[in-house]
Amino acid sequence: MHEALAAPYGGRGMTHTDEICDVVIIGAGHNGLVCAAYLAAAGLKTHVTERRGIVGGAAVTEEFHPGFRNSTASYTVSLLHPRVIAELDLHAHGLRVIERDIANFYPLGNEPGRYLKLAFDQERTQAEIAKLSRKDADALPAYASAIERAADVLRGFVLETPPNVGGGARDLWRGIRTGNALRRLPTDERQILADLFTKSAAEFLRQWFEHPAVIGAFAFDGVVGAYASPETPGTAYVLLHHAFGEVNGKKGRWGHAVGGMGAIADAMRRAAQRRGATIATDAPVREVLIERGRAAGVVLESGETIRARRVAANVGPKLLFTRLVPPGAAPPAFERRMQGFACGSATFRMNVALSQLPDFACLPGRTAAEHHRSGVIIGPSLDYLDRAYLDARREGWSRAPVIEMLIPSTMDETLAPQGRHVASLFCQHFAPELPDGRSWDDAREEAADCVIDTVNRYAPNFRDSVIARQIHTPLDLERKFGLVGGDIFHGRLSLDQMFSSRPALGAADYRMPIEGLYLCGSGAHPGGGVTGAPGFNAAREIIRDFRRTRRP
Image 1 (tube, rainbow, N blue to C red):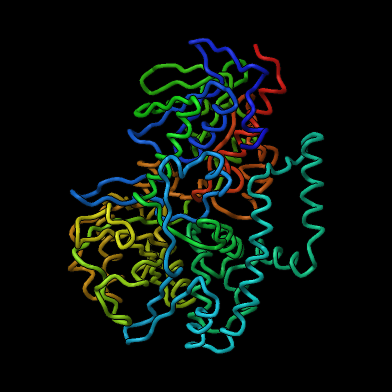
Image 2 (tube, one colour):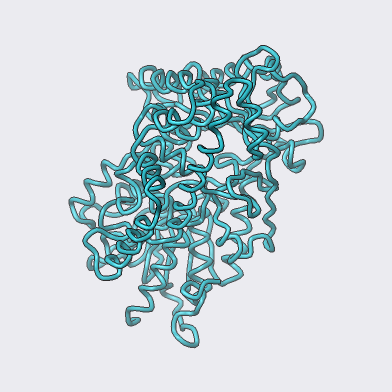
C-alpha cells in the first residue's frame, strides 16, 4: 500500500479516548468505505455512519421481488480504480468481476440484421460499422487511438489532488506539475483534450464519422448521467469520463461484479473493518457539528452526538451545505455556489424480473447470446438521442427514451431463479422536476410503462415477460440514496464543476471552507462513477493534515 496512506500516523500508532474519534465519515457509500479503509490503515480511529440499513450507497444489491436480486442503482463495473482494488485487496475479500463478451448491442430497427455491435476487438467492430459505412469503419482506428490517448491523460490525474486556485506552495507545485504534464503532450493530443473538454459529443464525433447511427452509438456515453443533448457543449467530456476505466487489467472494458454491485461495497466494508474502522448503519446524520468555526463531529437524527477531530462527507456537496451544515457556517460566496451547484442527471432507473430473455426482432432468439450479455442500447441514431432530451425539457420525459439494458443474470446465476432473469434499465432523459408542478409520485407508473413499451418495440416479447418491476424516479433516487435531483454523479460533469472547480474554486483539495471538514464523495475530483478515487484522494489529504498538525 502507498506509504503516504498506509504508514501509521506517529511512530508507534496513536492513543484514543472513548469520547472522540479521529475521523467520522458521513455515508457508507463506496467512496466513504474506501476513505475509511485508508484512514484506519494509517492508524486513525475512524467511524462511518450510514443512513440506510446496508452499506454501499448507490452500489448495492437488493432483492426487489422474491427470488430476484439485482444492483438496484449503480449497475456495471469499469471505473473502479485498479490501485484501490489491489491495495484494499478486494479480491481476497470476495470481489470477482466477469468481463462482458462485447461492449454494446444497438438495435437499429425491427428488420433482421438491423443492429450494430461494438466489440472489444477493433477489427470486429470495424466489420460491424462497415455494414453501415465503409468510411466510418476506416476511421475507427484513428478515433479509438484519440480516445485512448486522452483517457491515458485522464488516468494520470484521477488519483491526483487538483491544485487549488489561490492556494499555497503545495498548490503552486501541483499547478506546475499539471501544466508540465500537459505541456509535454504532442500538439495534436492537446487539441484533442481541448476539444473533449469544450465541444459537444456530436461535434467531436463528426470529426471522424458520418453515419447517424454510428455517431449515435458513440454519443450515447456523452449523455449518460448528463441532462443534455449530444449537441450540448461539454458532453464530449462525459463521453471521455466513461472511457478511462478497465476490468481485470484490460483498458476500456466493462464487466459485472458477481453478486451485483453490492459485492464491491461488501468487499470494501470488510477491508475497512479489518483495518480497524467501525461502521454503523441505520444512523442518519442530522447535522454537522460546528464549534468555534470548526467541524467537531456530527449529530445523528436520534440526537446522539459523535465527536471527531475531522469530519469527512461522502454525500453530495449540495446536500452537505444545504441540509447538513448549519446556515452561515461557510463563507457566503461558497454557500451561494452550493445553492447553485448544478445537480440533476435526468436518470430514471428500473429493475425488472423476467420470465424469459428479450427476443429482439433484429436478432431473434431467447437463448442467452453475447448480445444479451452486453449493454443493450435503445438509441438508434443521433437524432433519437437529441429528440429524447428535447422531449424531456418540454414534457418532463421522453416518450421514446434512451435506455441501456443489462441482463446480469446471463452471467451470474445467483441473481434469479433458474430459467428466469433480472434486467437493469438505465434510462435518460427524465427531468428532475416535472412541468406544471406535477410530482414524480403521480407520474412514476406512467413513465415506467413508457420505458417498458419502448423496449417492447424492439423486443416484442418483453412486456409480457415482465414478472415484477422496481421503479426509481429522480425523486426516488434522491430520497433513497441521497442523490440530489437524482444526480448519479453528485453534480454535473461540466467545465465549471470539474478538476480545480469541483466543487468550487479554493475547495478542490477535498478540504471544505470550514476547518476540519472534508469532501470524500463523487462531488469532489474526479467526479462520479464507482471509482473509489475521491475516497482515496480525500484520505491522503486528511492523513497529511493529521501529520502536519500537533494533536490536542
